Length: 336
Image: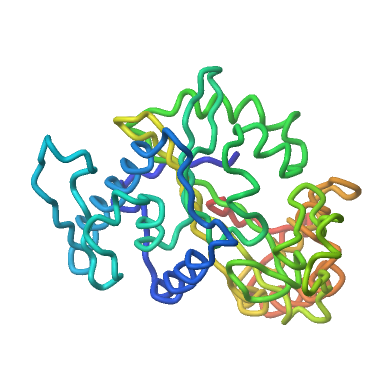
């Protein structure tokens, strides 16, 4: 799973120079009801609200010049949730919190958010969240599913054999005082953060399990865009997620945050040691139907990406930027 502890709690949620652009993108997707980018299932408003309170409290303390929380006085006779958030900069009116905590928190943060709640069978279910920039799945694909079904219906390779037991055990044992993070990576054939049509095809008819168009919807679609293979390395973008998990103290739900970064492969390959490591990682992917290569869409970019990375790696070796040992590999140690 590659999980690491977040030692400094101030690093839980992070902002960068893409904040404004990402928030605008999230707002645009939230405004389209057909996308269902935010949802709280009945009975889980308290879990969603606690998520909002935790995020708002963190942001106002970590970035006090950017975020301020105004709290309304408690009134026992008022059945509405107390502690509304007023953010004129984001056009959030007081009282918005009582309508949809997930919608409000999606306007505050660049991360996608999923609230996982333990059910009567001891399984964790996706009960509330805001998903705007997942890239190859939508909230409607996973909302209401258990942790296992999220991975099985998402066709995650080797989940049952390699990850199921350890992941369920991790969720059950996660303590309130632990903040953890992990990273993963993909590649896509355009620069779009929210949905890559050239990688996945038309969003409205995408089937999350087959990774292709849903047959019964093709004829109903106004336009069908099929995945398009990259013709050069300049078409390929490196997509990586920083995921964090923490247990909320009151509802005991687990908050899963996903922050996605996109960078052109041609830019990343200028970094010392990266081309060789990246090519090695891609070549380690198992091949075949339902394999990691299939899951990551390798057929769309590997034919142009691997030769490019090999060439960049060789250039770095010749220039002395990367030094190889007698086995033809590098002795460099990397954090992950």
